[in-house]
Amino acid sequence: GQPASRISFARLYVNNELEGIYGVVEEINAGYLARNFGASDGHLFEYHWLRPFFFQDLGDDLAAYAPLFEPRTHERAPTATLYSAIRELVRPTEGPQLWRDRVEPYLDLRQFVTMTAIEKFLAEFDGLTGYWGLNNFYLYRLPNSEQHVLLPWDRDNAFRPDAVSIHQGVLDNVILRQALAFPDLKAHFFATRE
Image (cartoon, rainbow, N blue to C red; front, side, top):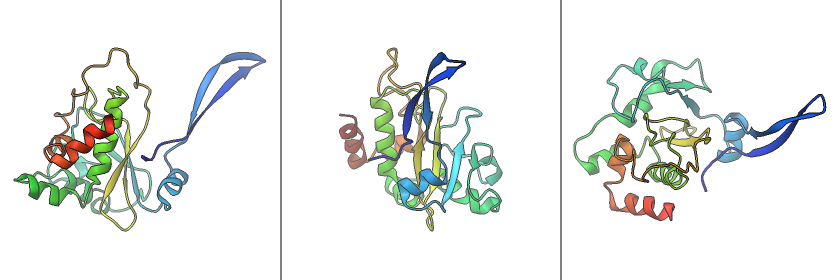
């Protein structure tokens, strides 16, 4: 039930010689958004790993979020339009229920927990609980909303035979750690993995 890119495989021949089998992966673009969400006019951001980042607060300067979250739609929108909702998503709040009440308008927590649980089940160590922080996802702010969903990308490190514990990295991700403090989201995390 999660949005994901379609994939097909192709045999590549050059001068009638097989060069190999390649995966052809659907881009996360307007067509992908329309297929998965019925509309493509929301704000799409490609996450770029530049340094370890775990959804922690980067402060009030919205420019701090720009290198990490590249706009792929509405590229010319003002900085405040692009990054204010992301800034609110990571802003710290005292008290668990206050945190949840403040974050849920900016992030579909159930979808976030589901996607993370799927990654852990697939032994993906270069995603939302990556060994060097967050990696390999897009963030999509739904049309006429401040709420984001996460979209998986580049799952070439899944099914690693040397994968470590399913718990590795879970507590490093600030949002996931706080979300799993709630019994309903924690139960959903473990039920999704089974």
